[in-house]
Amino acid sequence: MQNKMTKQQVNMLSTDALAYLGDAYFTLVCRLRVLEAHNEKPHKLHTTVTNLVNAHAQSDFLEKLAPHLSDDESDIVRRARNSPTTTKSKHYGLAEYKRATSFEALLGYLYLTDKQRLETILNVVFEGVEL
Image (cartoon, rainbow, N blue to C red; front, top):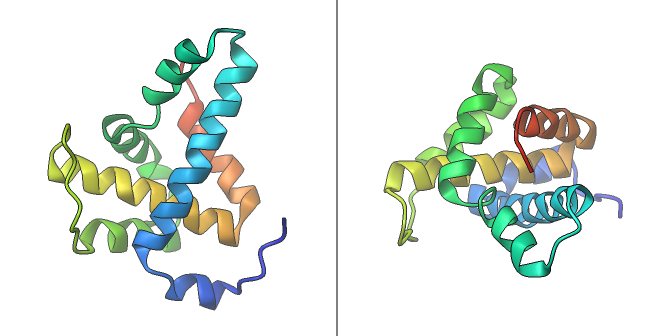
């Protein structure tokens, strides 16, 4: 599927919209990678994926990525982290939740603007991660 949005249109999207897309994309990527690594029952696959797509793990992934981000990418992360939030997490603190949302917004942004860079970022994220 080809993206038909210009970079200017993508920059006009809210960080919540970018995070919405990034969350869906990251969940799919994690499911595919776990499925490729294991031939397990769905419950075991789900448990493994859940350990990757929670706020704590995503917050850690963002910290791991920080030195690798360009200025534009850092701006997206900053915008997402500083955007007002109306959602609360049952299991994580506000700061950790905002970092996780920033990670998702970054992935959504890269999905729409630069899929090659997105692959590079995901390789950094999964480096050393045991599936």
